[in-house]
Image 1 (cartoon, rainbow, N blue to C red):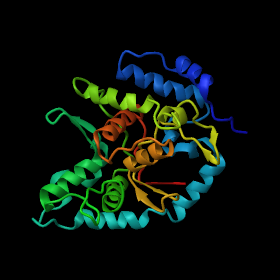
Image 2 (tube, helix red, strand yellow):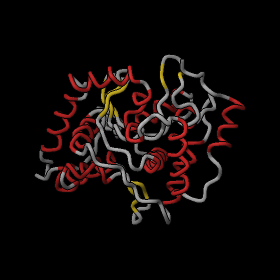
Image 3 (cartoon, one colour):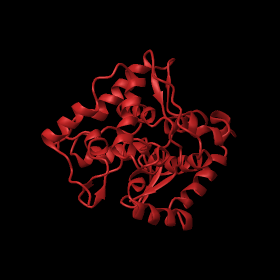
Image 4 (tube, rainbow, N blue to C red):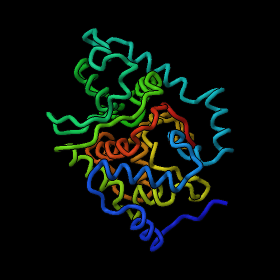
Length: 284
């Protein structure tokens, strides 16, 4: 039987016990991954890329059956491949600014010192389109649309071509460390009317039930995006999930590919160093 969701003073105790103040990102990473090894001693470290399915053999078997028979994101991969190969207005393609599609997934996110920003895969794809097509990904109203639709489909194709590579994000330093700290603060900060943080669900309560859902560990969270979520009925980006979580705790939201979510992605990717890229994914 799964344990109940931990709240209040118990969670505070767990915070103090599990995560003392660390000297820097490398020490944070060691403590973060050691936490999950201790919390789930019977789980192979490499299996955290499978999210909550790594924690429940029955759920994992069902999920693997769906993945092997008819993964719901297959049409999105085909659509994304077409987008990748279709020339822009100037005759170039994504390969001209992104390089070999098989190498793309593993390059992102990274800190760009010249522009003092974190560059994500979705952001890079959008920038490539802007440069060569005159505009980025937009919705019917002409506003930036970077959490669903065509950019998610394109990301699905790129992710599939990059499956199997390992996350190996360099240890943040210099001004990149400021972005890391911003993402770390976002991850642990309480927000919204429910006064909850990312860590409340995915560190302190990973493996426990919240209503009918098994909470997944934060380590490995970034590996399987973009993801077709049954609850959404479509494939969406990692930042769309960030937006959904903020909505669920009744907090003010931020735009996809805004600084807040780019920093969060940067921090969470570093915390998943060593995990395997296995997107696109499918989840409830």
